[in-house]
Length: 154
Image 1 (tube, rainbow, N blue to C red):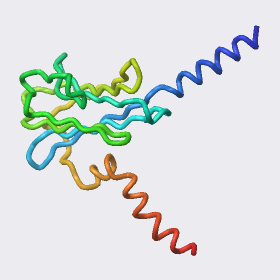
Image 2 (image 1 turned 60 degrees about the vertical axis):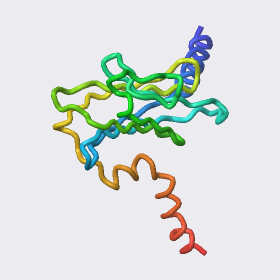
Image 3 (image 1 turned 90 degrees about the vertical axis):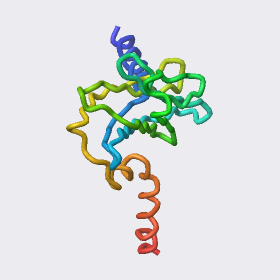
Image 4 (image 1 turned 30 degrees about the horizontal axis):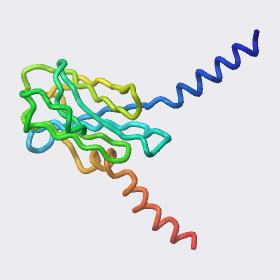
């Protein structure tokens, strides 16, 4: 009986670690636009296609999949890009009337994984170079810092 429970536990842990984990953050650009960063754990198979899209109030804001048409209120205002393990949304003209929930969906397998964040324009921090480096330039930062450290060892 204990062996069956142990196998179930191992199977559960294996399935849990294969899932994509997400982290969502946002900031306000100097032009008063919403910028969101959705970091995710890439699938172990690099050949799997990655797709990312954002929704709010059951409306599609934008997607990396060109066949997914955004809601008319967001057309020509939203740009979604994906690179490595980061999906970015740039939404021009964010309203400040009330907070809204934005959901980031990452699809690497048949079932998309999502994360939600409430966005209140009055409480958003201004995007900074450090914010961009945190989300998009981690590999560049590591490469930049590794060379001086490695040259000290030689």
